[in-house]
Length: 385
Image (cartoon, rainbow, N blue to C red):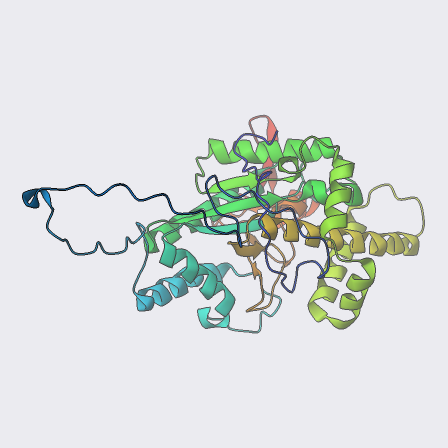
């Protein structure tokens, strides 16, 4: 069973159209979702009309006067004026842009540079539904003790979650139905490749959910591999998701060779794996070869997880914790200030500056300039005086 506060989608199997960052075409389609009770299957003949009731004489005075046809109902909260839809959609994107994690920082992006996202927002607005963001991330803490304080969420995660919830609150001021962010924790999907045990990933995910509940972050929910494929062992779940959704290694290798963004991702993942591999017995060059091999696996699994999320939640605005170019399928989001565009709370600790700023950095670096603060008997963050 998924932990309290998670969103389970075991029964959702709606297919999503293939996109540029989804799996290759030709893989078997997911089973079709059952039709709602009383629905007519597509292509089925309609049922025969019921026999007409016998004619009955009705006194003239009992016949109601004809009335005007009722206007089509508009969902509560829906925005019907196309100009208002365009304005509010652009303003929502305007809230996100200052926090954009960009792989093209030289581009001074405006809402007009994100036509796909504007279209997605307009779809929510015209139906009156809350905007749903999906964010793969918050997998587990790095296994490198030089980077992090422990294997559990700390002040870095709390600040990041509070920031995300605050974004949803700001969207609610522009659009009454508001927004929700589904955090799709991806630790289990590649835990074996990054050498983090599944029980540590469970503890991290459970504490993340508890943190959301304690802080009253009502616009956030969590989802992880425990919510799919029932009670199968994690190794079997990983294998099934990989087989169903992941690109082949040959496909990925070709993209690394021909696509600049994929190459940047491959190099970034390789760097993380090299830094986070503890106790390797071998030469530096052997470690790099091993990490390059595992980097392909991590990217394959990450894309598989993204495709599974897109299939389960086809109507969503896709966020990413990785740097992204303007106008692509995913919008890169920066959670906290950091000198490194790739740094996240789960690869670092957080330092509280005297001017009130919070900055992500390696734990060993933060320890040289600040003092350790514990909260609830656990290490939380560093603070400078």
